[in-house]
Image (cartoon, rainbow, N blue to C red):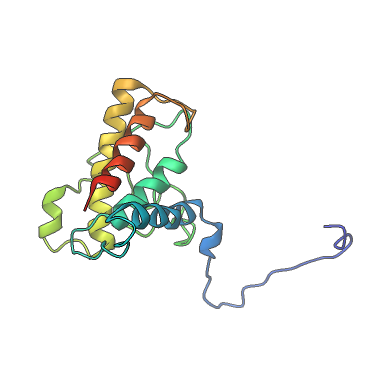
Length: 174
């Protein structure tokens, strides 16, 4: 900053493709971090590459982690949350890089387990999207029952319970 006083910078798009660096998208960064968690907890230390089946949860866990890490006090279940909206040059309520945004509002995201076998979703990202949709519904059911706790480390709210259940589930999965 000290070297820039008086320097003027102008960015010009000469009609070329506009690209947005995913390094500036919190959802993408948290999603990729989620892969680090799931690949290390699932299958045990000698089998970290076990997330390869058509219905594996790796992409879903990562989307869900991104949703959890970007959740804020005051959010509600029916809020619209897209993953990769910045990368897709969309507002945060856009679909982003998934078929629909995440929300418990089924008129906006009506995907269910039945969509896994319908050919409507791709492998692995579309399948993960459906799994994450289900986890997001579970999370909000727990928040509705136990409340939201801002303390991500020692909290006892539904968001904390969901995180503990899902991370423990990764540890238990073969």
